Amino acid sequence: MFRTSAKVGNPLVQKAIAGAVGITGLTASYMLYKDSVTANAMTAAEHGLHPPAFDWPHNGMFDTFDHASIRRGFQVYREVCASCHSLQRIAWRNLVGVSHSTSEAKAFAEELEYDDEPDDEGNPKKRPGKLADYIPGPYENEQAARAANQGALPPDLSLIVKARHGGCDYIFSLLTGYPEEPPAGVVLPPGSNYNPYFPGGSIAMGRVLFDDLVEYEDGTPASTSQMAKDVVTFLNWASEPEHDDRKKWGLKALIIVSSLYLVSVWVKRFKWQPLKNRKIVFNPPKK
Amino acid sequence: MQISSLFKRNSVYVATILVGAFSFQAFFDVGVNRWYEYHNRGKLWKDVKGKFLEGGDEDEDDDE
Amino acid sequence: MVSYIRAPVYKSVKSIAGINLPVLKAYIPNFVLWGGAVGAGIATFTDGVPLFKDTFYSKIPVVGTHWTHNPDPEDVPI
Image (cartoon, rainbow over all chains, first blue to last red; front, side, top):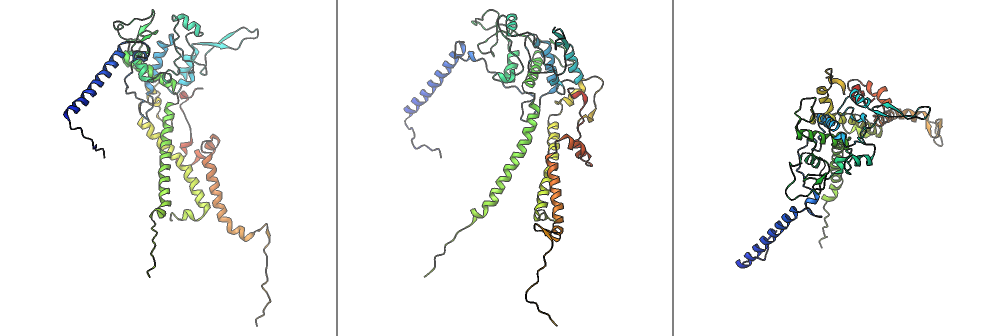
């Protein structure tokens, strides 16, 4: 099928072709390498190092989140991330039945004060939190957040896994990818840190996860990567709270739709069989 | 009792389809859920909550 | 002796809009079956309605527990 009729018989021409191919490859590799050592606009470094694909427990088509990990991740968020990052779109009630019991979520909410309706004289009042209240952010508004972080705005984490190219893999790599010191030749603006996974390499957030920073209630050793994995699982749940049900419905839909497809194939064949198999014969009358 | 007796009267035919639909949706739901929970055992909240919650909250018959 | 008549004598059964008793009687088994079909149809489309679940389906012997929903109160955000 793929036979070529034109055969290059001349060994000199063969060598010339091989040489051209080699030179092209080497040149391309060299240019790629040159591109990777600078961090100017439109280079590889500007787009950040690509994270490896990790083997998340929820990777498969029909795999749910690891809910113990969500719970540990919430602990990490609450004790570490929450000092700078908000989680606007998650209410305390969302945790119930996912990673916490009703009374635990209520206890979290009641520790905090929320704005109540004003009293009869119009003075603002406060009340303890309820399940329906949303998790409060660390800052009043964007200006306050920027003022506290040298002009950098810590992004809201509710949808961060969906909002970042690479999703879980990227955030895990970012959290665990801070080198001891930036590579030689990298010049960082004041107040920023080096992270090869962050596009451009210079990120305002410093490394925050260190071994044994939190103490897990189930006794899981709190290594840096364990905490990063847990908090990324939690953030993925925060981005996709419907994830587990969605995969279950997907499974049901796949079963039903593919069975209906097979039935339709059978019906088509059943209806067409007499038409496809009939043979029309014309016997010319013999004289 | 033959299969063809289901097709002789339209009423029987329609009733068969609807009764089949009613029982199928229940059985299908139960079957898929059971497989899904078996496939993800140990990861679901109902599997891990006994580990976290105080008071030995290990009641197995809370769902279903 | 045979007494011939000139033409057949027609007797009409009392009927309202073409529906009369013998016809109705003949249709009874069919109507019963259609009733069953309609019942099954209603059941199919109200399978998820709480009122129907609690009133009827949870009382079906053997498989009735499928329609009872009894979550752990600690898993309900109230």
